[in-house]
Image (cartoon, rainbow, N blue to C red):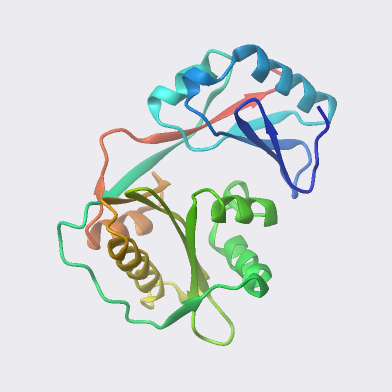
Length: 234
């Protein structure tokens, strides 16, 4: 298997991306239910990644039942996440800030904002941004309508479920109503498409994000998520 370090690779039900910021780190996302994944194929992939200089592999955020497959192959929990959902049973907030459609020409600026809003592990590079946009059959990118954008949101929809894939606001413009407006837009767009639930995950320690989502009608789901890690040296 040859690996393209500038884009995504597909291997036996998995999407593989080597970090553009650190070539020794790779990220994998299951594209099929974990019962359909093969342990021998994943082991082959890990060996291939090692030969390409990768020594750490992280999964996407997985539910508990999905984690078992990877734990049996020496993956361990790297970070647990909260999963929240909005079922549209409460009135929706109206955006207080104007937003517009995000364009490809905005991507570099969006990545700059992302780098200020998240710690190094969670920052997007361009392939990760593209992965979030293409994670669902339909997606929506919104940025604030100012000349120099200071925040963005990516919302995806698959069937009757929607996902707030990314919400990032430059720290200088947090608590100005921009984040709330971007979430409100995601909710309104989802409701227009008759979605049953909008899901979002966030770090357990990100109290500000939790309070924002809960104040807008999101509730914690009983089963959280976790990112798992495989280390070549263990």
